[in-house]
Image (cartoon, rainbow, N blue to C red; front, side, top):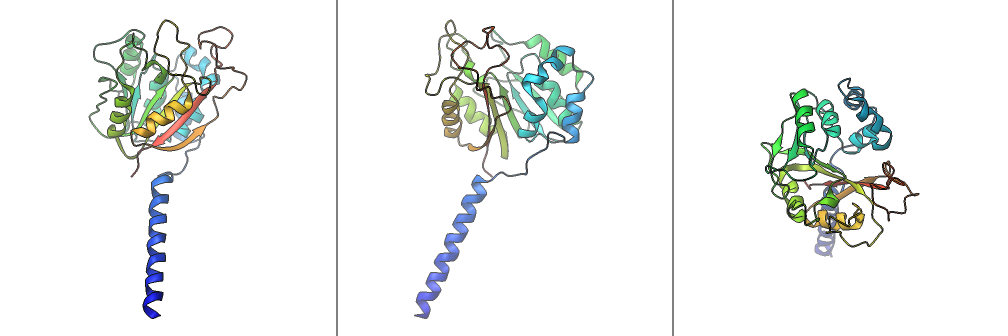
Length: 261
């Protein structure tokens, strides 16, 4: 009887350890960051930001997004598809002098990239270092805390753009991050179940959130949360994001994935 009790206790202890290990693999590695954190307030208030960027704040909600991405002083951030540099400026201030932001542009350039504007932006911030790397072979000089892409994931499948394989992009983003690091994907919502668009001539520049989750998790990431700050239930998700009826007011998903420790 004594041996049976000892075996039962050992089994319970082993089960508890397994449960704790599972929780450690699914729970956030760090606490949430407040939109009122000093580094985020400084990023939004940065006097170098041009007025057109400030005019976009109401629809881009930068303080909430930076907080959701858990960007802190000293972080290393890889920014895929930096566009005109709106987020580059934000990250450069939010990570501080000891941090680094890597605006990421393909070495050979591609239609639709705003290389000249982001180069000018990076020149204003000593801790913004251009990274020229294929999107499906992301490589940085040091491990990253955050990899970020906004309103661009849907472009990866467009065959005319030849941006590379998005599964490989997700895998190399995973490899570029420190254990516990975050992969943030923001994009325009498509109708649930909508097929992935591949034709650049007919695309409405949207993607199904479930598709993104499935593809990113396949690379090894753990889904770590979503934010509703860019949601717009009035958007039917059927018009092009450039249609005047919805431009600047599309329903967008904001997803956070974590590289397990």
